[in-house]
Image 1 (tube, rainbow, N blue to C red):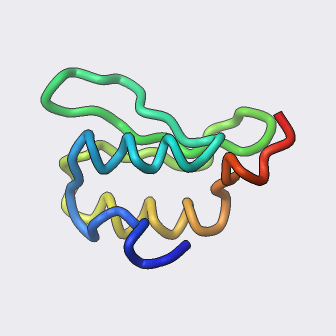
Image 2: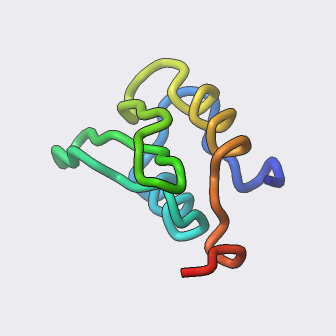
Length: 79
């Protein structure tokens, strides 16, 4: 994934998370509390691979790794 499409290394906004969910089939926003939410990466069978709250200090860094490894691009999806 090109650098411009990654989450920032720390916390991230809802708009940044929504951009990722539009790009990937298996990444979703969950537990949306308005001011905070979790971004969740799931495997092709729907099992959770990783999740992080948007306010965690290193959330973007860790999620970017899982998005790069496990993200299923919508353009490549067979659904």
